[in-house]
Image (cartoon, rainbow, N blue to C red; front, side):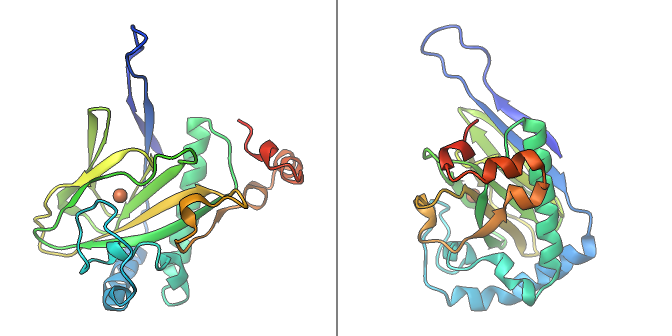
Length: 243
Ligand SMILES: [Fe+2]
């Protein structure tokens, strides 16, 4: 896991902005499994497109794109049909743990939703962000082939970084960071996964209510640390989110 940051300089006036957005990058090396998942998802496109329209999410994509059914399905619900997805999820969870360890933030009980994107020659994804509310956490995407003609640009406060779309490349970013994909010029379908990870805060679910979501991490089980267990035995949820 490599973390780079979109980070401001130290403000020198009371009105200068201050920001620090970490972008985490890792790469899954299981190329055969990635091929299997990619082919499976392309084969699933027609079925997913039959699901009800959810929205553009400011991506500019139309109803012929599986992206616009986000939250109507959960990619990891397909694991029974494509078992390689279980291995992928294990990798993503491990990399999340690496990310928060390096970024020095605490683990939370998290849920997530996961959808996918298929772009073809001439398609693009407009600048958008996933969440900027009070419960904003992390989002992620992963590319399922080496798309030499494609990159994803992450922007915050007029600072930007362009990351090439490499096979198995996984990027974590705070949900408020804007991003876009320039016009794709490749001949092969560009297939990528996208995820939003949410703090699990019953009874408050925020924007999760209308989206298919599943447990991403239960830290008590994932880390199996006695000190975490003690924290989570408490019925007091405020304790759970203390920084
Ligand atoms: Fe996005």
